[in-house]
Amino acid sequence: MKTISGKVLSMLGWEMVGDFPGIKKSIVIFAPHTAHIDALYGKLGFSSLGIKYLFLSKKELFFFPMNLVMKKFGSMAVRGVEGKNAIYQVVDILNHTDELNVVISPEGRIYKVDDWNKGFYYMALKARVPIVVAFLDYKNKQMGVKGIIYDLDSYENVIRQINHMYKNVQGKNPENFVLAGRS
Image (cartoon, rainbow, N blue to C red):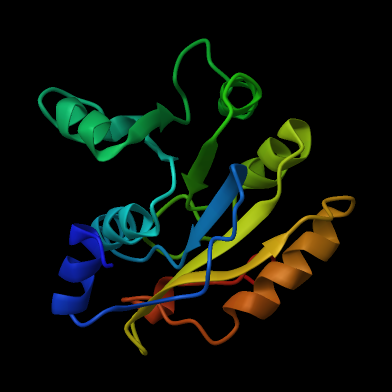
């Protein structure tokens, strides 16, 4: 049975593909993130998967009254929050919960960036959780899970796998999506 979120996505012409198989804790990378609307589609998509999740969002979005919306949205402020290192904050949260999938857009911005923020990798490595590769493909109007990376021994190997999974995925503004390490 489809959730309300899943029904809304279908009405908007989107198809959910790929499974989120029984993973209780993970770092979920969500890309491409080239437009503000991606966050809404992501919220609908992750809600339709029926998993417990937390979005990491830039602190600039947490001003009154937007902070109330962001918290209701399932977001937590990161990047430049005084006295808090996002990597250790997320690791601590994951270490003190039985179930949580932390969603982050490693590009960090909706405009073209030279390279991705490596924080997602260090969060997963330090928390000893897999990286779930989630996507939003405007060309095919599909979103979901591309794959799961369990072996985090080498950042370069992880990036190769991620780039392979995202190579045919197109963002809303495709000119703004650069694969990791491919500037």
